[in-house]
Length: 507
Image (cartoon, rainbow, N blue to C red; front, side, top):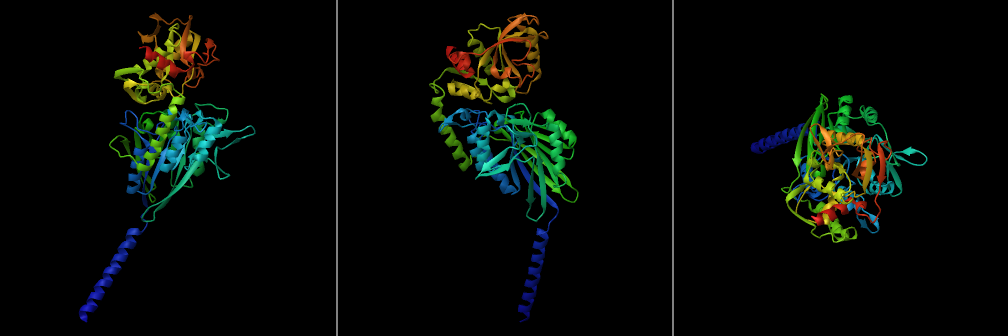
């Protein structure tokens, strides 16, 4: 009997101790950990560089692993994902794809928040509205709005007859296992580098500050999700020193910078890398600690089965539909053992053999009866190296925008300013690839002669450059632009991609 009583007392004490331990373990400790997975500037859903890097199905594997590590893991896209891509130019059921493939993939990945990038506005208002309506994830922007005939309103999603506006800010509540609860906020702005009749761009810096002030007292922390140049991110960071992290896009090459205590992180384009930010917040001290890891997405990462199936579906559509766009798409037009370098990091910062081929093809399109040729690095979108057998499909991936090669007569003074601008734009899409032009002895030469400011030169340009987006003072309105010839539909110069294909077939 005594033994039974003793056993009962010991069991009771053990139970009380255990309950007390559980209670203590689940008591809110005022500290919470959460994780951000950041992508930016993703145009290809499939792996690139021969399957070595990227691939959204691989990113989803990383995403799911992070969710297992911490349920408070959020997935972000810092702009530029709907355009450009070769798949996006194809017609399916009578309509251009225009980013539909990316939205389908991103819906399957359960993105938590996306920002507008300037290339979202490559799409017509009608097509962008379709993509907004199809998306299951929230969008954010403080400085881009929809211009209608009558007024200016926020962009919106329309689903089941209900219109939901894109907000200037975004708030998310997080709760951890012990019950610690906080609200975190996000602000976003987009660079106004793609003017369209249906888009109103507000001032990036002012709108960032306004949106921050509108939520800073409602949340524990405010983060940035932006698509602007690094110099703009730095201005925002200086203005908002209490923002611990700005997840940015636009530059295509990974970087991690600090302005005071504000961290500005950008991953590589096309998901070659992603940023993983593991964040800790202490409610008592109000201190935020960010530990960031730049993770390479490569072939060692398994493909997520669900997302991989969607990617395969769209690749099959591409293979079936490409014949409607390119005659003999699998024809071998060129062979090379030396990789043709179209990687973003190089194509936006130095001359490459692929850039040389494109500019030579531009001259070829006019029977080499011009003084030189110029294309901006931002028109070259493959972010890859081409080696072995080259096909027309490869070239259309290189230059998904297509467009005219225009023949321009301009003054030497303007030509020198354009070349100087491109030289200083190293690291951006405005960096220029040139043919028959070189910089030596601190001056520009063309046809082995100094460029003379007072002379007139005939240059082949990609038509994009004459729109004034990359080089503000170069457009059809420039005083020193004397004439612009737009090729007829039947001419080779009417499509830069077909000009490159024809040039390579001649080599």
